[in-house]
Amino acid sequence: MPFDLHRYAAGFEFRYKNRIATGVDDAERAKRTLFGFAGKRLTYERAGETV
Image (cartoon, rainbow, N blue to C red; front, side, top):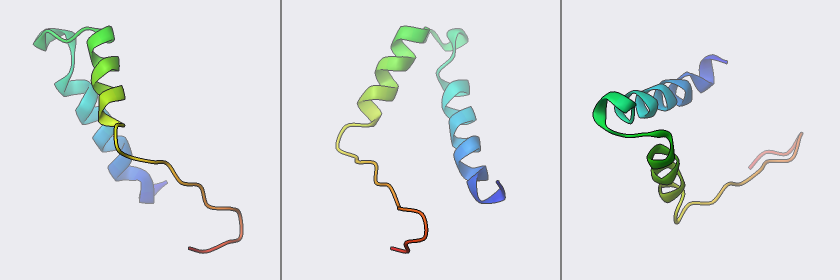
């Protein structure tokens, strides 16, 4: 878990910066999230293999 701490912190930061108080509702936050995925790909590592 300590090695994923930066991911948890980044997720919290995104939600904080994109909250209702700043005029961003759930639909807008979802749209921003999906557009943030553009041009990126997710890769999986098989158990026991090293890349």
